[in-house]
Image (cartoon, rainbow, N blue to C red; front, side):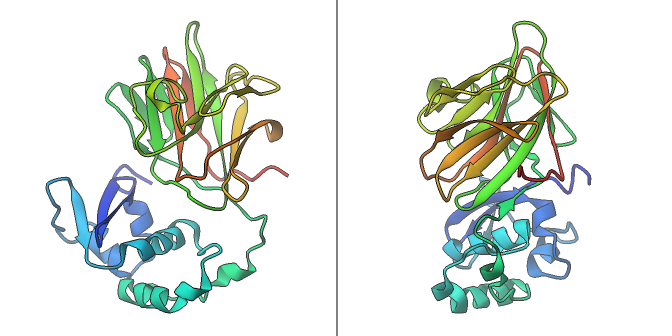
Amino acid sequence: RNAESEQIIKLNVGGTKYSTTRETLCKLKGTMLEIMFSGRHSILQDKEGYHFIDRDGDLFKYVLKYLRDGHLGRCPTELEDNLKDEFDFYGINWPKLEAKNVPLNFINCPNLVIGRKMEGTTIIDGKTITSVARRTCLASQSFSSGKHYWEVRLIYTPGQSYAIAGIATIDTVLNTDLGGGYNNRTNVGWWIDGVTVYGAVSGKVKQSCSPGQNAGFLLDLDSDTLSFYLNKTKVGEVPIAHLNYYPAFDTLGGSKITILHNVLPPH
């Protein structure tokens, strides 16, 4: 994996805007999206940097989900005929709604990389995060349904610093604390080297995270909850609004966290 494969691509599909990575769009070789964004061709962009595709914008979210997760989830069967047309247009083999066989308790464990950040945040290999000033950054993918689990490892927290991780909406203000200031209407963050949960809801977890330990986050948009785990042991849970959320991360004072890949969900 390299910086080019993790490049953020902005799409305008029939008027609906999306952000994803080049790696996701090029996951299936020989498809129209892989050919467009492989770098072999020059693709026009509008003034805001979006690539326009004249197709159904609402249905494209299912195409993007399939590229990201390898299945369609519990997709409405009444959309099947229209979705087949979209998959055919993009040159993707129709998966025949194989997700009907996905169990209701299926938990997606994405390999996250950072998609949005402000100047002053240092990102190493797309997944290790540190900053001196207050900075919130967002993962490159978001979730609006299903269950999703990810983990971060606390690397370093010097005195008078903190590390917060949780969820945020696309309109979050990146130069404020996650879960605080302008972010507190919908965003939720666990101060992982403490026990406090900030944001749209507040609360406590049972135990703080020490350097070298892993903090886990289970975003359950079937039951609208965000649960917190310490080394796979559940330490707290809060209710959340049913929105489209990005995994979010906030460091201050030189603290450092890294997003873990290829994790397994908690039992």
